Image (cartoon, rainbow, N blue to C red; front, side):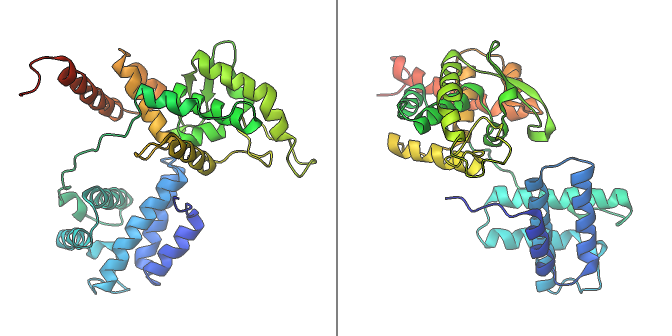
Length: 333
C-alpha cells in the first residue's frame, strides 16, 4: 500500500527541521516554492518534491560541515554538488532519483540567478547521469477483458467498479482527473467527458467508447443514487462527483488505486496494475491500431509529443513479439 502523501505544511516543517535553523538556506527555498506555486502554477505534490530535494541537499551540506549556518547557497560549489551525487549513488539511490535531485538543484539555482540571489549556477556545470526511460507496464487486450468482467454487476458497488474500470481504460484519464469528475462534465450525447484543470491546469475533452458509456449510464442511473443515499450527514450538500464511496462522498484517488489493485489480484495478474496501467494500456492500444500520435497526445493531455512517444516503443515491442511468432525465419533454430 502506498504511503499517504504529505501535505505541503508537513513537508515545510520537516524541511526546516532538516536544515536546522539556517535562515540563509531556508528562506530561498521558501521563495522558490512560492514561485512554483504562484508563477509556474505547479501542483502541490510537485512543490513538495522540490522542497524535499532541496532540503535534503542542504541537510547533507551541514552534516558534512561544508557550510556553516551563517553561509548561504552562493557558497555551494560545483565540486560539492558532484560529491553529493556520489553520496546518493553510494547510498543506493537509483539513477533516476539522482537525476531528479540534480534537476531540482538546477531549477532552483536558475531561479536564484534571475532573482539576483547568486551570481552563478554551480549545478549547471554538472552533467546529468544518462538514464534509460523504462517502458510502462501495459495490459494486453485479453488481460483487459479479464479485468473488466470481474465486477459483480448485480450490486451497486459492482456497477460502480465496472463503470470506473471501463471509463479509465476507454478515456486514459489520470486517477486524480477521474476522481475530480462531476456529473456536469459528462456529455452523454457526444459520449465525451470534459476534464477541467488536469495536469498543468490544461482543460481537454476525452472520449468514451460505447461500452464505457453504457456502464456509466447504468451506474449513474441505478447504483449511484443508492450509494449517495448512504451519506450520514443528510443536511450536507449533495456530492456532485461522479464516483461515490460507501459513505456517499467522493471516491478518492487513493481509493481508486486500491480498488484497481484488488481487481488485479482477483484476475491473478503477477504484474503491478494501477489506474495508470490502464492509462498506459489505453495509449498503447490506440497506437497499435493506427491512431495518430498527436491525437493520442491530445487525449492524454501531454504538453509535449516526447511524453507520448514512449508508447511507440511499447508498440514496437508488441510488433516484434508478433513478428517473432509469425515469421518463419524470424528466429534462429
